Image: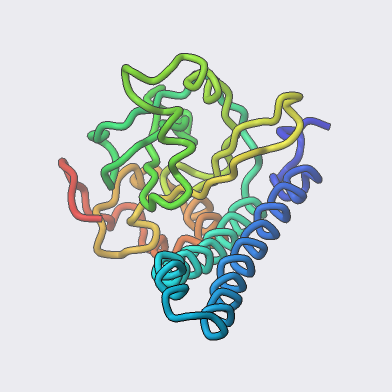
Length: 235
């Protein structure tokens, strides 16, 4: 069966394997960065003092990388929640850009996804709010100078989620059977009650409940009670 034939993305075996691989690589990265720091510390204690200065860049950068690796795990869990609630959609030719989108809740690179209500042909943008692990996407979304062969790698996208709240985006493997480059996207208002909310007016209680089960924290308000905004506000 194709990925889109499953009622939720998590039922698709290659998706589960892709997510597991993502977590395993995070674990390996965490152990490697922390382990190398400890090993080099031990070596420096057994060698002349000048050796410490050779390792100093790693002693400074290593702890930062450990913190970054630890941040990947909450994101992986959020992807797991989304994949257990929403099915995959296959999108072609999705609009994307590196400039600020007028309908986005946050600045940065963005991708538009279809309105889940089907009432509008205008896409709803999700931005890469957090920049770690977004360089691969930035290079391909790019601007006028981005090579066409890089841009074409995003001509087909897989998306699971609701762009009014949160979702997981991926690119398919060459044979189109497996998601690659899994990335968690979200609107700040789904996690920060102070953020401006957009595109929630058409969300019914079932939509809100599904988003909550997928990990969104602030979706319990009735759509009619949500503030309407006309410009970008803090997120």
